[in-house]
Length: 484
Length: 87
Image 1 (cartoon, rainbow over the protein chains, first blue to last red):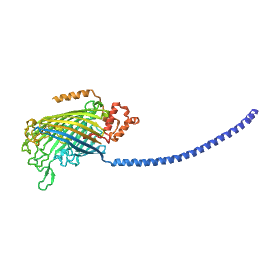
Image 2 (image 1 turned 180 degrees about the horizontal axis):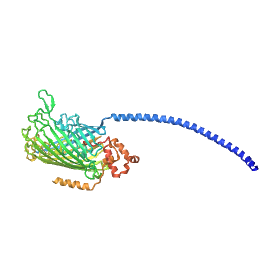
Image 3 (image 1 turned 60 degrees about the vertical axis):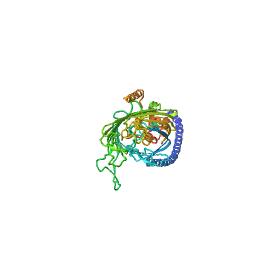
Image 4 (image 1 turned 45 degrees about the vertical axis):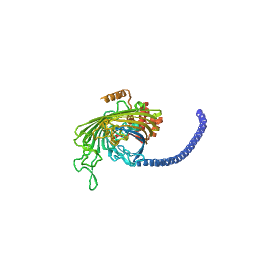
């Protein structure tokens, strides 16, 4: 009993002290909690103010971004420009041995490029061009020829060189396709891009086709199907000559022939693009096309004389490698073959001679040509480049390169053409090229489908320059090329 | 006939001693759209390690990265892009 009392007396005060300490601690904790609550409230207020400020900033930034987005969306057309300048020093030697020098022929070609990404599967491309000699007031007599509009030096008028849409469909399948409708990318094609130091500018080999063409192309992308990147098969159609009859009494032109005597000239072609095995940046192209119902003279509206002369087939093969193994080496080889199928009709030339296709209205005639070349870049970022090209055309070689930017249309030469050049690349947009071109013609009327090619050596040498064919042409030129 | 001989002599050695690369195929593989950026923006991407990782370009070999860079810059929205029907 005593023991219990003693224990009580001892513990009770201790317990009382302990209770008092606990209460103090609780009070302190409560005080801390109150202070923390106050701090949290304050922080919440500060946070809210900051969040409001951030939201205001975000809204402001959003409005700004949306303005930029609106401008981007409203910019339906993207513009690009290209400018070519040329100074040519030409020496022509006629068969009559007379030599004529045309020094410092200055020319400018301006191109306004248009592009619109309408949707992910619909894209538009356009190109407006002006090409003229400096100080020249006389338009080129063929500048209105459809194939050459904007392609030959004439007046300062802008021509629509290209205007087409690419519509891509079946993109997710193993055989994606595209339909290209309009004025086609058919000029300045491979391998002219090396001389201009630009990217590939057209679908077809420039040895066979170089000019303006209205048409439709169906492209089958075979890359997925054959698991071989860069493989395309194309069916192409274009209208080479569209018959327009002008009523001689009312002068109101209308389209379509009043009878079946005159047919439109249509061009149908198939083209296979692919790459060399294991070579990046290479292109192989095989092609076959038929020009049906070739019109004798697209610019002659006298249909008592003008007529369709038959068909011509054009076959081609090319291979091209760009920047081989990153060594700044580019090279290419093209081959072309043509064969005529005359329909016995003929056209009376201004000199009174009747002519069928290549001068023969009854028999098929064939010709060929090839074009080889290479380019090498050196110095920092390949700022300096040197290149050489050679092409040869046989007696009956004819192609569709009337719209070549090169005023000599050297790839149509019936003979040999050799060209060397050096280039200085100022930057990725601008370059200058100094070159020398030499053409030895073996036959006259290079590039003409009418009249029989005559060996230059058989042409009489006692005729005036105006009637004498050129046997040899030299040109030293300086070109500037800007693409932006 | 002579021409075909030249063509064979020209093509076969090149084919045998070269390597395989495709900038377009690499871009497709990585889901990169060349025309989504301007040339200078693609150049910036290839100068920035963080962006190289972000676009998973770092998984490619040096040669593949070079081929991809060439393709993206040559097909950038402000580039002198190739113009070929249906491509």
